[in-house]
Image (cartoon, helix red, strand yellow):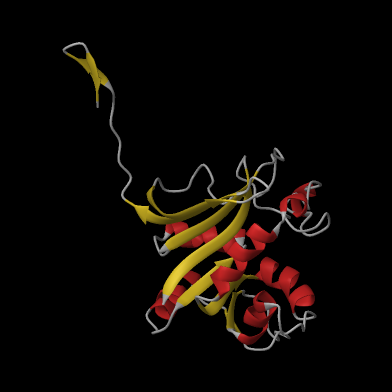
Length: 209
């Protein structure tokens, strides 16, 4: 399976609490719900398209606890996101979760890098990470992510959990797909590439790289 990471970001790189004011207040975060004013049909189409490629869902414990009460209560058969989240196999990285209530859920309580590496060896479509900040950082550092799908919203919040932190390994990216929604949200699908550097110089009176 290919490992893909899906997340919503502010312009200043924060991914914490996008969907509700009280979604994730850890660390004293008080600016949750920043996604909601910018959600439109274009946004919905992009997110819905992700789940058509999903073979299984991979979550961190915090995101699992946030998603389970909401999405397990959505029984509308026309909601393909809820159908995917409820019916697909789910894997949760946790050393404390022992009795998951969300159906089709398996707890990964060992070395997350090794266990995810083993899951990737299975045949099928995509193993999709949604949210799960700490897990996504770990997988990025281990070089296990095949594609990032990022929705960047026209808002800054100044503080909060970030996908790429100061100690994250450097990486280049190749643009796979992009789109701008009517509400000004920028969508980018990116595959990791080798980090490269260069410099500018003036050669015979002309700027060159």
